[in-house]
Amino acid sequence: MAIRIGVQLHPQHCTYPEFIEAVEGCDRLGVDTLWTWDHFYPLYGEEGAPMADVPPVDSPRRGDHFEAWTLLTAMACRTTRAEIGLLVGCNSYRNPHLVADMARTVDHISNGRLILGLGSGWFERDYQEYGYEFGTAAWRLKQLGENLPIIQERLKRLTPQPIRNPLPIMIGGGGEKVTLKLVARHAHLWNGFGPPENFAHKNKILDQWCAEVGRNPREVERTVGIMRPDDLDKLDDYVAAGAEHIILMLGWPFPLAAVQKLLEWRASRMVRA
Image 1 (tube, rainbow, N blue to C red):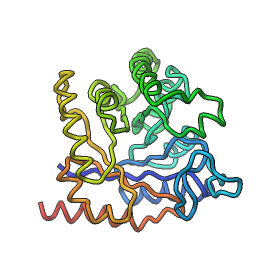
Image 2 (tube, one colour; image 1 turned 30 degrees about the horizontal axis):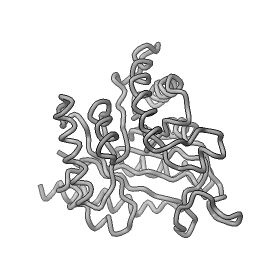
Image 3 (spheres, rainbow, N blue to C red; image 1 turned 90 degrees about the horizontal axis):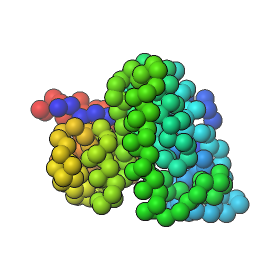
Image 4 (cartoon, rainbow, N blue to C red; image 1 turned 120 degrees about the vertical axis):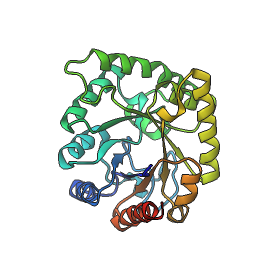
């Protein structure tokens, strides 16, 4: 089976033309999936400054940023082949019925290329500044678990139906007691992170939850997000750990040469096979 290649573009510290130029460039290069994240403020500085909940006044994390679902609609209009989605959408920010309707609509705009990415949320500043209840990590996971069936039920009731039916759902996160159980119950894709040994461990836990809930584990596509430069030297290790879909996470100025390197690795691997 050919490994799928994706790219997540971070909508911070850039202009809209710069962002959409990268979107179009990735689509032309032939990636399988294109993603952006669901936040309201930058997560890190232009020089890779570490994340913090309350940035200082002069922090680059007070820089330019764009909203996710609006960008996703633009991505649907400006691409022709790649599947698109949020990696991942925050469950806390929108009514679940509305999320289902937005997803169905973008699915039609993209001619059936949307993946509905969902997660419980974690970035406290977004919650504080936009007036959402932050609560605890356990409470946010509980809310996600309650909203997933609501979203799936609303999708069944919408007219017209999504072009892809069922609409594929991705859940991101590696929590072994709750998150991966939700993946086994509801998701078509799971997104985890490295290093490879961590991904392999989480992958096995997900298989166990699939067995527990009576789900064929092959029904859940295993995706891994990579962002460290040395991750590009560990691609075969990620595949050995169970990755079926590798997603390169890029910030401005969006170095598409790294995307090309990832695609060339896949091509060489297919030749070796």
